[in-house]
Image 1 (tube, one colour):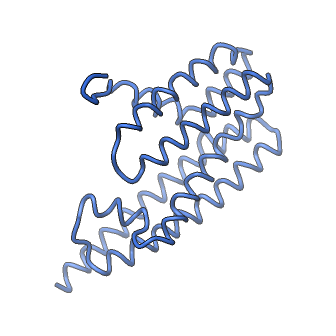
Image 2 (tube, helix red, strand yellow; image 1 turned 90 degrees about the vertical axis):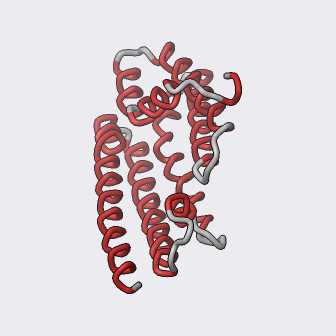
Length: 195
């Protein structure tokens, strides 16, 4: 990787792998093929970790921590031959996201505000209040989603685990993102109307 440039396929591959994590784990457990799948997943996560070191922005820490967690869970599952460790990945991701979003509420600028200021550096006071509220909403989502993900692990039903962590959680996350975007557009229009 010369000059700090990174191969664009790595973020795509790792992103797809993380989205497909429940299905990959389900496939690996069903077909007894985790012995070759785990090293491949760990290698992609190492590439993602290395690439995140060169990235800038407020989400860099999240990407690094999630990649490290994935590497640790892959390694523990491979070494201990206890593949239940892999089922904890969605729980860990929600904990990391909660820690980052929730922790940012105790700073001058919550994470959502930092992300918003990338696009609009001169965020009005209404926008600042709005981003703090959105940060709280995401914290609530991570608490609920992480708790249900943990329940699916404890329950031990692979179909339920895959259904929640591989589909329902993504649908809910997408719905929350779309709803937040629609609300944000209304807040922006209202703010512009008061100027």
